[in-house]
Image (cartoon, rainbow, N blue to C red; front, side, top):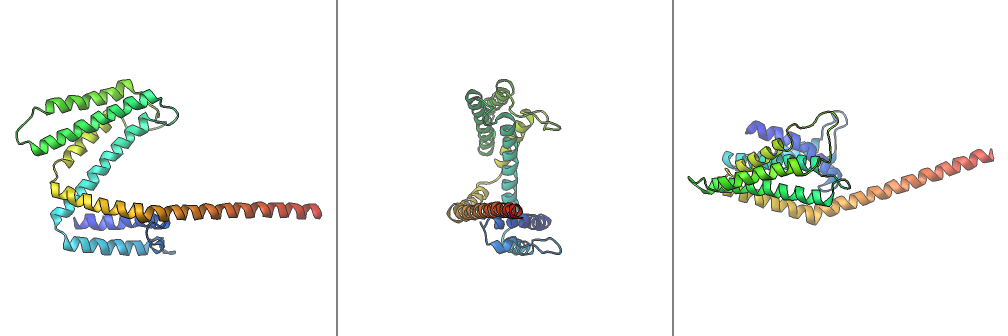
Length: 237
């Protein structure tokens, strides 16, 4: 876990650097050392924060929180792969889009029901007879009734939609094996970050984007004026 925390702190410092460039966090965190190309400020902040959390938090809590975030991200990646492969704005018809949404709902709903039933039931198996066929029905629906919108040119994930659908089911099932208190902690942290994003980060990044667009417009106007002046000078000579 110590190695995971150290590697995570160094890697997340790069994320923090890019976030700071949008002014969602203080911009001085985006400073990069000119000689080494290392985001020194962000790395120091992440290492200090990681050390404090690791020192005052038990190993079990850290491992569960890390597992929740990792499994949740893996599940979202598999879900995004299905969306990427089977939906394209302007190409996918409303009928195919609705069929795709229904199939995704069947896959997600049956996977969640299976995980919850496994976590709460001690020796039951009846619900699996219902949830597993529903998952299979949703996957078959995508395979045979929803046309692909994107086709990989060189290499793509094989066995689509089966492999992403299985990945979604497995990751959700593993999430169901984690205790409820860990989900409460994860929910609290997520809520705090969302509040920060909606009440501060979103406005800061919007203002930064607006300012960048304004500077770009001014630069383009200046470039056009310079071209006009150069043309007039050439005509005069």
